[in-house]
Length: 296
Image 1 (cartoon, rainbow, N blue to C red):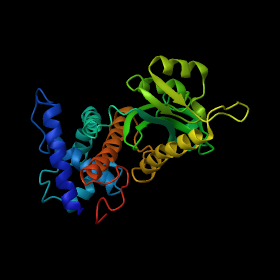
Image 2: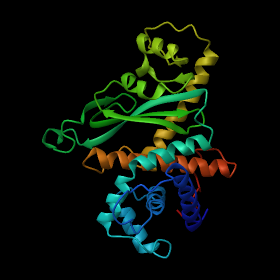
Image 3: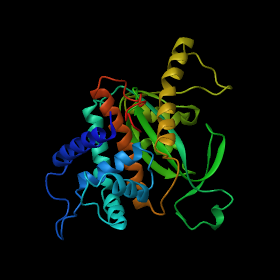
């Protein structure tokens, strides 16, 4: 769809959802902001889709090109602060879209992690950004040592993100998974990194059938047809992580504190789910994003 139609559609949806999710005013005192919260989040989501991933780039793009739609755009610092303060609202909007797409009660889920770099490893000892929070880690799928955080993503079978948690890079992904799997049931597909007898038992007690490829030194009695099926389905989360990394640059850290990082990750997941929702509304596959914005 044309960019202006995309902006209008996203704004109307976000404005309606915010009125449902937050019936009372967010601010109990002080003057309300000139730019509404719905407008700020619309600018963030649209900016992500158009390749503007830094706060200042989003602000600059809309200030230069869309003042006729957003006449009350404030100073850059005011916009950035308001956007960061809305991190919880963006998380709630993302989950509301999950419910609207009927992805909250799926019986097949996929789980995986990905690196979020804070600094080049050679510069990490001198870096003061996220000191005491970030750490060194290794990403097996990319064969990459890195310094920063690790994002842990849970998607349902169609590729719609339904859960996310952020940890330091040295935290075991099986330990991080507990934060997400407590609210699901059914089949859960993971890679070899999720192999741990205790974790599989804990999943079984939650009503989850954890299935992973086995290591070369482990005997596998499962039918080959089943193994091929789970490998084919598991590629979907790799596609989603690829989209989040390439389209939304989720693996790049452009902030210096957890407050801004939480907000930016929330808007990237919201932008992805917004694209899926618009695709489903148009009768298309959820994560086939080609030509979602005609002029982008």
